[in-house]
Image 1 (cartoon, rainbow, N blue to C red):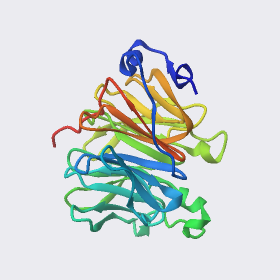
Image 2: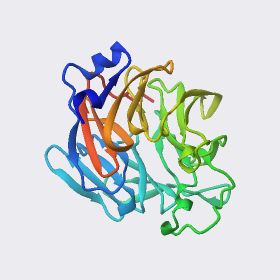
Image 3: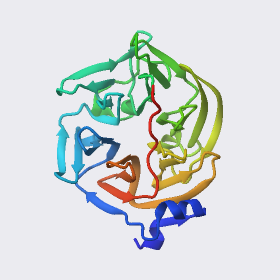
Image 4: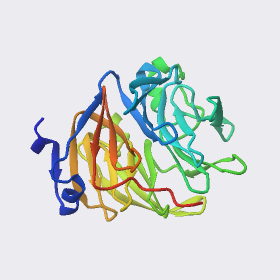
Length: 305
């Protein structure tokens, strides 16, 4: 893939972000399906869920490629909390867990309304310490994960874990398959991807936006339809642009919903994260491979709680 094929520029702002000589670098290519990309500042490394292989791998400048956690209960989405601890969604484990500083694991959520969670997919932490995550049924669509035939939840939902009481509450259930999840830089807007199209050509393939009102979501609206694939994992940058892993690569939209450009990847891209000390490197998980590109922008910074 030539440089001209790798980058599509629809707006001068994206040209500025890419710079004069953008370079998409291959970091590792020993995965089966790269998901849950997450930069962990306390460890100075990026974590990537290799879901089918039941492990989390890592990459750092000093150590290169390595195994971070194995087995991982088929970890999917990962993020960090206010203390820099890793929060993971477990596809096989059907739970959201936190890795403590000394390495032990704490269950954050594993049930809702008396039933076991379905298949936690992606997760984000708000500046008040609350944990918001999506719970679609993807785990039940893969018999090898051993979930059985019928989920205990009656529908796919987006859920929130209260930072004080640990109570799990529903914030939205108006999705086919809720997937990626992220806040705008000021946390006034939440973006949630719907990826129903993965199991039906005419099903959902859009990014929805909501106004955040305390511990609830209001004013649901279509932010962007994603083509030709679906909006999987995504993150926001300091200017509020949304960087979406969208199958053919990364699609970048400004806060108004206008597409700024694309970064094409050689394999299907499923997740991404800003990282390094200046948060100006974008790490991309694309099927069997992990990629990086240095940018003239930085990932959004969580507001002070």
